[in-house]
Length: 301
Ligand SMILES: [Zn+2]
Image 1 (tube, protein in one colour):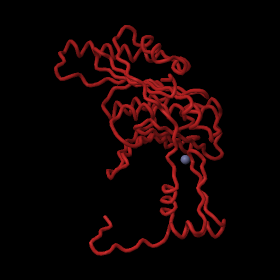
Image 2 (cartoon, helix red, strand yellow):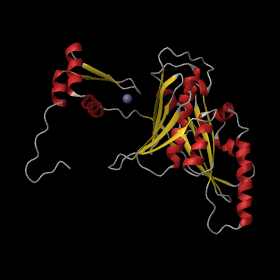
Image 3 (cartoon, protein in one colour):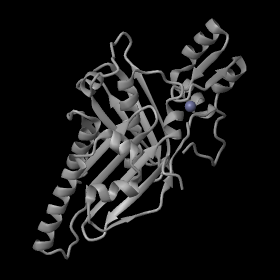
Image 4 (cartoon, protein in one colour):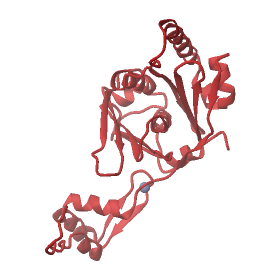
């Protein structure tokens, strides 16, 4: 399988450490195809997309994982999503009138923002949500804080993106096995600390350019590491007419009819892929047609 648009999982054979690595190319290009942003925003968008892919891979769930930056800085919105099947998409919006330079830093973009992590399992259970303040100087540092405090899982994370690729490497310290002696625990802790330190020496360009088979021995030296088969990562927007119809219904009949009267049709454009959804009079009539009353023996639930 290709080294790009793929995700790899790895385990240290003799130490309770696990990792995930991802490199996106075509999926990253497709995700930002309709979005023109300064370099700093493109880079953060790519990093968030790589992070969403890594987080989705590290969790056991079926559905969609969303990372959403609620910013008080130059960004008004940034969202990246990955499904359990590694279908990804992302979008960013810059606040109107905000001055973003190509080299604007993380703090300028997000201000005193926070990151909301949502896991939606697409069944009857309500989505799970975690909120983390964007305290670090990078998205990666903020996510490390999130794992440490919300998941009690020590994590080291590297993220990088340029106009060709977006990549991420995540290493996590798993709980010691129950039978572990004190000596082993101390030794494992030392390996973890050393591995985190070495990860800190990897620069963005190196992360973007180096295949995982080269990167692992380079960063983690002589440790025996099991690298699992690649999972393909692909771009896919999940928008469809039914979702947009739901959105229009939630806006309300009065507002929908007002727009219809003014403009002759309602066009809703997907913010991720820019696909337009057009609703003319008959569509709007159907949207707000009264729901038939349930007959005896049927329940609305
Ligand atoms: Zn779409």
